[in-house]
Length: 406
Image (cartoon, rainbow, N blue to C red; front, side):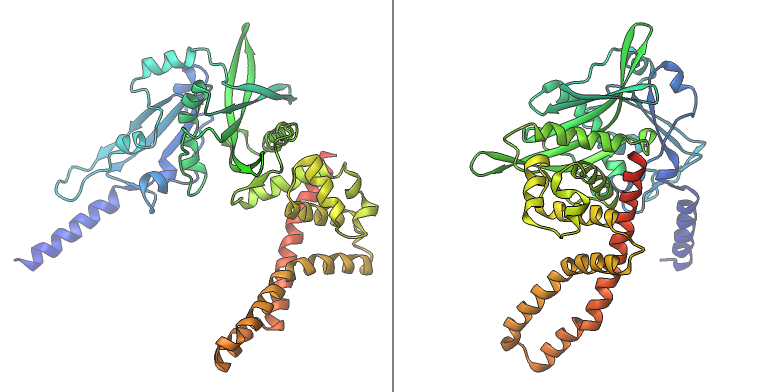
């Protein structure tokens, strides 16, 4: 074997790979199409946040120069059409082979896709009516929006959802497609309603999904799973409207015990806290005078019975609204608030300390000392102080939004 030739070949191959590699999130562009003209320009496109669930952990596409991957959706029904352009494609054989972009995209398109422009244009012009039941509508900035409720028992919604859920792979980390045969899933989808020449058009904007868990003997506990607002509609307050619509629809159902959330992101946690705080601020137990007396069982009861809020979430909302009602310029009042929150943050430490005392007889003196050192008072105070400061920063963001909304 000629080692020099082998080494040279490896270097050539490595050089080729470097020249023909591009970042997936830089070359993929999405666009919602309401008319044929939307196919002819690059305006109002938006990029993915993640690409690893389609193109691998490195989020790169290999084998092309000047690559552009346009993923077009019909604005309403979300039928898809792909247009892939490039200036050059790698030609070397052997182990050097360009990624099959179309095959990879097709693999994450359970509803299928349209493979030619003429058929896609016909789909753009088809009338789309949202599946399900309209449960809430509102106006904002001279535009009209409607929220529909649907389940997997609705075949029309199931077909629509096959297209809708493709967005989750690009915008929700570690997202998975759901089992569309499971009718415990429920969905709230948001649309912009547009009147044009006597016709009504609907543009898909986002959705909220929840799973109805059973609570003995005959109730449900909806758990919010995914919430996604498409980039063209973000930061306009629509997420709060969507979440409130889900709340109101669930609250009106006597079978619903409370509403929970599955592994929420930081952004969704702030959104949820804002909506819950806004709702709770109208309850008797959450008025300023009551808040300053401390958290109690009546707050938990009223929040759950009136708003289907869990006990833990009721406690967080109490802390937000009490901070809002606290006179920060009053040192003693502010100190009492901080101590109240830190007592809650400290409870896991106390439980863990009691557990360690129980296990002391099974540990050697050195092992016990090492474990307790990591849980020292100094470390505990440092953790509590850091946790409190982070929490107050998040709470203040919610309070600022509450003030802007009032």
